Every structure is written in structure tokens, then in C-alpha cells.
Image (cartoon, rainbow, N blue to C red; front, top):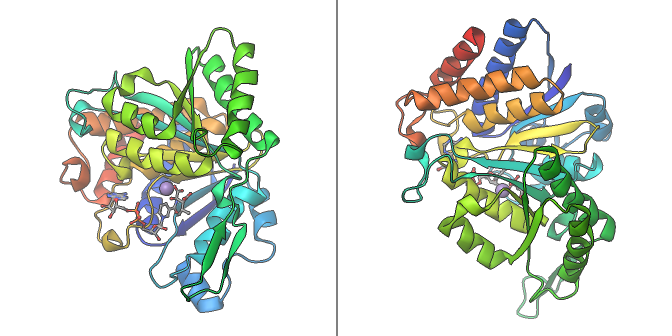
Length: 349
Ligand code: NAD
Ligand code: IPM
Ligand code: MN
């Protein structure tokens, strides 16, 4: 397996070291070699070279079996240009239309919702990942004046909506799940989100064993907090999916706990924690590596290494159940020590 590793910026670097540590433990435990190639693309690299991603960058990435990313974002690059090219650019260019973000609570003490435990918080969000408001179509007219007009277009295509909604249903069907909820804002966004309504209504009858429900996104946010147990699979657009998965991360114990995959089934896909580069925490042995390590487990699972992925997930769970971890989840370990603990458990699994 050839894996491209982009540590990126801030705590992205800290947590990637730990994810790599755990991948090496998996390699040792299961007797398989991972060929990890580190790519330097980051804010540092951009500031030194003026290059965000080299001209052949996306082709380079396509040659790997998978891509692992820490996080991108640095106050020295205020327009976030490098993150747009590296992170969003890869999602677009490699057509990674599925942003798979499981929301799974590992222990009751980590959940800020009163009285909720692992049985109540266990669902998957499928965020459309290649269109919506992220396409960067628009512009500013008379910028910096009181006459300024700023336009940012939201793109919804039948192909784009259909493939992510279908993926959500297929995921549910393949796991024996019985509920898929689609969230949009079709009451206000009467053109773009009417397409989501149409596609959802057309696909739902093809899955008679699955209860298809719809919430407007504002109500969905409310129900996520009030009654998270009702959800098994949520499918939504790019921006709404971004927002509700930070909310979902808090149910799991915070942004440091949440994992994600940017996936095009059957093609080179990219895995990254949900959190960003948290510059204040960078290089201080404070960042929680579990979101990154969980993302590595998602990567292994997507690559078909099911037993290996299960070993990593079991190791994470054992560490959390033992009350160990970084301060954000109430532990006393540093980033490195938390990574060591999980890697040791993988070796003994
Ligand atoms: P952030 O996720 O970096 O951090 C927000 C807060 O969440 C932090 O201050 C911290 O309190 C907590 N947190 C996040 N990750 C943690 C971890 N692993 N362990 C412990 N606590 C953690 O979000 P932000 O502050 O809005 O963004 C910072 C930068 O990261 C920005 O440049 C943003 O654009 C970028 N960003 C990148 C990605 C990505 O690369 N996938 C994702 C989100 C944000
Ligand atoms: C995420 C991040 C990115 C996004 C940013 C860094 C552009 O917040 O992966 O959730 O909005 O997709
Ligand atoms: Mn986000």
C-alpha cells in the first residue's frame, strides 16, 4: 500500500505523527508494509516557494492508494489559498464526492448532552463534497467601497445530488440500517434545494426497507441536540455538512475526536480528522490525536483492511475506556503519549 502523507500546518503536524505511529504499529502487528511518502505541501512550503500544490500535484496524488492529511490553515496565509488548492482542490480534482463523517460516541463522560451515552449517539453524516457553495464561482464588484457587491454561487447538479443521496441509501442498505434523513433548506432555497427534494423523493422508493425522512437543516440541528438517537444516516450538502459535523464532533467529546474520509468509491481517497490546524495548540503536545488516528482507521477500512481498521478502533476505544487521553477529553496525556498508548494497544491486539 502506497500512502501519501500531508501533515500540513499547526496541529496537523502533531496529530499526523501519531497517526503514522499507529499505522506502523498496524504494519508490525499484521505483517504488512505501508509505503508512506511524506509530501511537504503546507503553509511553510507555500511561504518558502510560492507553490501551494505543484502543477502535477493532483496526478501525483492519484498514483497513491490513499492520502492522509493532518490539517491546513495558517494565520500567515490569511486567504487560506494553500488550503483551498491542497484540500478543496484535491476533493474536486480527484472527484471525492463522499465526505463520510461518522458521529460515534465512545464513552458517556465525553458527551456534553445530558444523559446521553454511546447508544444514543451513533450515526453517519454524508456530506456532498464536490459542489454546493464550495465551487468558488462568484466575484466581488467595486470591492472595498460602499457599493460593493459580493456574489458566491451555490451549484447543485442532478449528478452531484443523485450520487451522494444514493451513496447514503446504499451505505444504509449495506449495513442493515433502516433510516436515512436528508437535510436541506428547500423552504428558502427554492431552486437549488428543490433538486435535493426531487432526487430524494425519486430514490427513496427504491429502498423500501429504509425509512426516508426529511428535515430542514435548522430543525435538523435542533433535533441533533434534542434527540440524536433518532439518526442513523444523514445526507446533506457541502456547507451544511461542514457545519453539522463540527456539532456532531462535540457529541463525541470535541473536535479532537472526529474522523472523516473524502471518498470516491474505488478510487484514491483522502482521509483527515474533522478538526483544523488549531494554531494555538500547535507544537505543544496538547492536540488530541484520536480524530487523526480514527481517520487512519477509516482509511484502512476503505482500503479493504477490515481487521486492521478494527484493531485501531478497538485500541482507541480501550484507551478512552481506561480514562486516558489528552486534556480536551479530561485526560493527562500529551499528544505523543496518547499516540503511544493507542499504538501499544494495536501491537497487543
Ligand atoms: P480548529 O478545528 O482548528 O480548532 C477549533 C478549536 O477546536 C481549537 O481551538 C481547539 O480548542 C479545538 N480543537 C480542534 N482540534 C483539536 C484537537 N485535535 N485536540 C484538541 N482540541 C482541538 O478550527 P478553527 O480554529 O476554526 O480553524 C483553524 C484553522 O484550521 C483555520 O485556518 C481553518 O481554515 C483551518 N481548518 C482546516 C481544516 C482541515 O484542514 N481539514 C478543518 C477545519 C479548519
Ligand atoms: C473541513 C474544513 C474545510 C471545509 C475548510 C478548511 C475549507 O472546515 O474539512 O471541515 O470547510 O471543508
Ligand atoms: Mn469543517
